[in-house]
Image 1 (cartoon, rainbow, N blue to C red):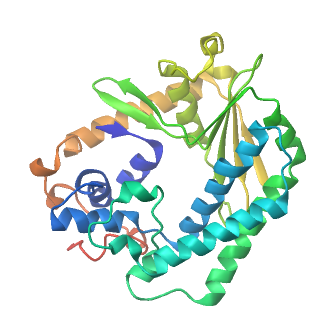
Image 2: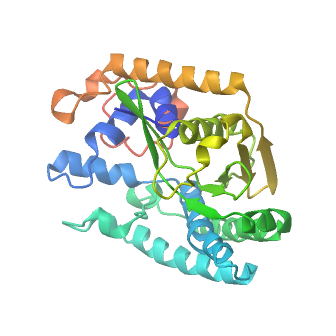
Image 3: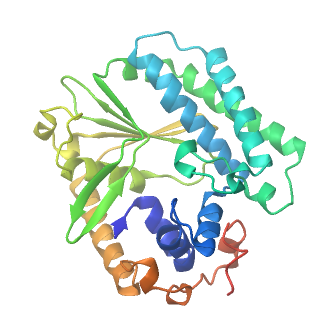
Length: 307
């Protein structure tokens, strides 16, 4: 059984939603019900889909150019984003993820939008808005010259790197958008967000990343001297790309203690409900549905949820 920041937030919102995504869904499942749940688990809102494209362009293109000490140009990033937008939109609109015998692992980030899957479709005005949002987010990233120069001073850049560490008899899993290591400075962890209003802050998520990085046994692609830095030395940055707001956070002892306590409490709560069980050992009824109707609004599992 794993704890992750995003997974536990989903668990808190709706136990059954978490159950469908984490116990029932399986990329290689052949059973028709599990196969359908797996497909539903891939569905995203249009705005979440928008964020995935921005994340991909920054992680796969922008950071790679920074790593190679190449120029970083707004038009080049937007061109890549437009190509991804069209390819992913075609995949989602034609519901290609429902092709019989499709192997999800062949597609990496599967493109699937709730409104296409349920037959409602997406208005062209909404697609235009999303495309413009993607452009704006990438423009705001490139124009932060001070940030770009800071990233260029790193010695290593790990994008979407999964960190997994034992926690009691369970595991904690984290996947920061970017970890920068430096020759003579502590690590710097970044999280890119693409939210229209950006009213929520994500300090807790970054603290979970910092805790995980400080506790994990160093992987072979980590600096050999990582252990000389205390987690209190780490730098944490949340970049709200649509509102062009950078939020830097410091790490305190209280922060780390609170993070560790939340992980322990969360794992115990999940364990007591049976989140450690396999698919064959559990049923949907073991995991109560939310009492907040707003959580159901964009839930991709509505077609199969009977409560």
